[in-house]
Length: 84
Image (cartoon, rainbow, N blue to C red):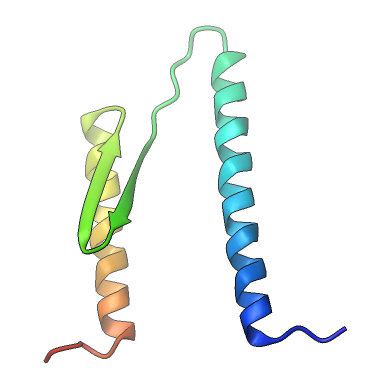
């Protein structure tokens, strides 16, 4: 069985969604069984050109913002500095 490049890409996308879902479930279960400990999280979502940064406290919002800036810089570099 030979996978085309598009099939491999779709498989990797589905695997990524599955791992993200599994990680969310495991985080929720570990926080629930921790006996009063609170899970702290942060992240970012891109909707078109608009980044949405979220977190459970200021520390994680800052970490997510730094992660977003690093990701945006990496994409800019990999795209060859579009428009420059």
